[in-house]
Length: 550
Image 1: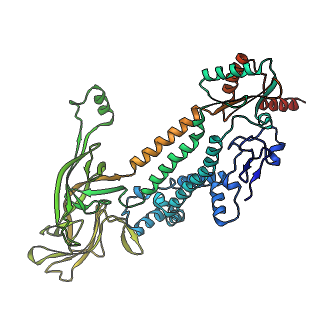
Image 2: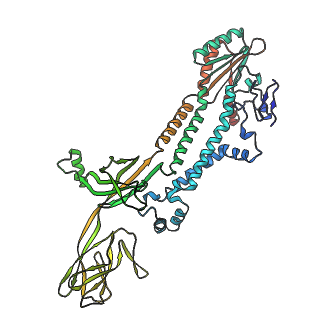
Image 3: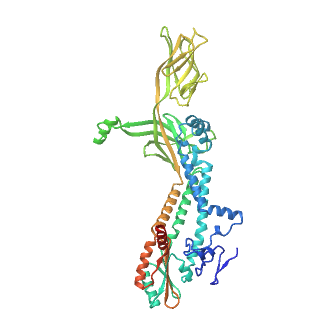
């Protein structure tokens, strides 16, 4: 693109609004405006200059503030939708089974739940489209920042001390007037401005006083912190960087630890202790009277194992690492992982003991025990009798289409269909047995009767590993530095220069907090006998008020 030549002879990049050397307005819009836009010092931005190639169009798309706001709104809206129903993490089914997850959302929430699952909202923060939105947001922040920070840096780095009178007159704060001794006024102004911690540059009867320039970089420091934070968020999707899994483990069970390859955990015992009336203090004593019990300790005693490095694939050859009591706020730590005690379930059925009896005489053919995790198909008894288990429903939920159904594999409400075989009944008699319920197709001579049950406790554990935590912390710290940098300081500039004869021109600009700037300018004006100035923003407000009254 051709450069724009100013009347002062300086060649400015295409798209420049104010001459980089003298400050003259270069565009028709800037020439007609009473107050120039100093947001980017009138420098040329790439997005406003190049618009031909595909790269230019992509750059211009992501550099748009409207596009950035639109992406932020999309992230916020999708995040809000993700809170309507429970995320995958909180669903009480096998989280690695898509069919069970779909069935859960469909059963509880109907068609909306099915749509929620199929669109990926059930695991929103790990979905490809949410990560794409985050990537687009990061791209928008980077391009928008580069599009503005480079020309801003160049213009502030190269800003001249002496400016053309048209630049001065187009500042929001401007004043001009005759001075008895312009050189003395300039010297006094320089002295006063130095005492107010301004950096002073002088050139041929002109002063540029400037301070807090670093505050202009606050938004870009802010953006840098946000980009680092978003980078940390995206890293969480890479295996090995972030793990946040749940694990339900029963007493006596050995399970692979989700999210921690080659590690296994065995639950030895779950312990829950409560405060007694005697050991509780006065406040706890009142609480015990009110609620009955107060838990003192939740604890899971576990053994940690690791698969041996030289073991064959599929082998369960494990190496014992250590035993550890997992207590609330005292997690098991290993290899960057932390396992927390988060929840528990008491008295889950482990096994049920039954006996086969003859109804009329009460004669027992012996007892048999059903392991509710892996029930056997046949149970041999005394005197040639046996019981065949031909149907098992761990969590019985009624009958559908003439068949019993189970709503989960957890033995919350076990039910059985038995075939009872005796010497007198070699073909057997069928019986449906559930808790507090027995159904027979016809009057049977024999009956399976409940004797006892064995229960066990279940520990709810959370497995966490986060290598991105320090990246997120760094991004957050840099973000806050940028917020403070841009909020508590403001870039202030004061131009004072001689005009024709003993005339003095005065102009000032700040990116915010004009009241404080005018307060400092008043102190300099009174000390150095500078001409009075006007704030054109105040004049515009006064004119609008007068027109409103009319």
